[in-house]
Image (cartoon, rainbow, N blue to C red; front, side):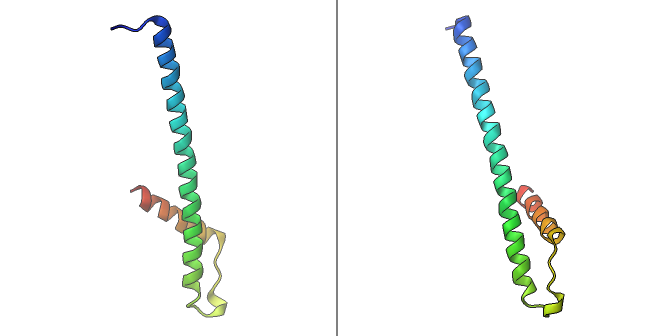
Length: 77
């Protein structure tokens, strides 16, 4: 049974809405994954630094970012 023009238009709107919702949800999930990777990287680097002498414990934001990016890449692989 063929859809009327109005039914097809409503179906197209619903499909577009669902696609947009899905895309937004994926953006949010990606951002959450990156934040989780940053938290994990920071915690891991701090724990690893505890075994070093006090003068060698410097952890920079770049260290955390690089490790977090590596975690994201490994997760997406």
